[in-house]
Length: 309
Image 1 (spheres, rainbow, N blue to C red):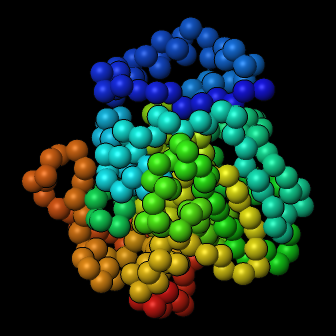
Image 2 (cartoon, one colour):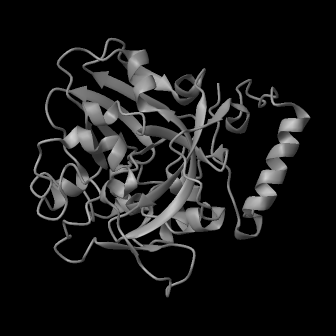
């Protein structure tokens, strides 16, 4: 059985938000129960509900979101992923779930998303260079998947790995990072309702340059924590390795929470530049935990966030 793959877009095919909303309404009116030729519900046809965590702020355009990316597997420039990610084969796709779980195994992508209710969450998403976007992710809580596979007692962390396929992911032909890309969360972070596995943006399948077909989104952390094109999820008792923390622990902590009071050694993180308004857009003050302090600050009660950064 084939897996739903992300669509390929040319610059001339990028859909403005208003046109996309009108098209979506037409699709709904034409019959939301339609299926793909593979017999699986298309992402846009899955039950979608508005998340209570969504912001009312206007999201960035599809073009902004898909042409300014960090995805070193396709190159180190912000434009490299959009230029090179079309090489990636995303069908078929599977995710190995192992470690301290009751039901370890290799799960097909369609089985992972089968039966889930996709929530539309619009997040302010930030990378370490202090730029930000507002992105309408479509996904579901990571905790839902973990509950399905069964979390064993003693599991304290969740680790993730990205696909390694240098024949298609040309950035992996260099040693700029140690491959595979790795990330990890503490269990309570992973189980938090804000932590999602995203499979799309703007109600469409995830573009390849944004981490197709499945990626993590942790909105109160810096962008590099939200690992893309996931092929392994492991539950462990010990703190897992994280790529940037491995590369330079002085610069990148394991937690990597958005904290404007802890500067990166080479630049300030007290302000951010919103993407979409041009290079001369006025920078904005960075909010603690990316503005989600009310929801997540309790996870770090009693911790020194200048040491556990």
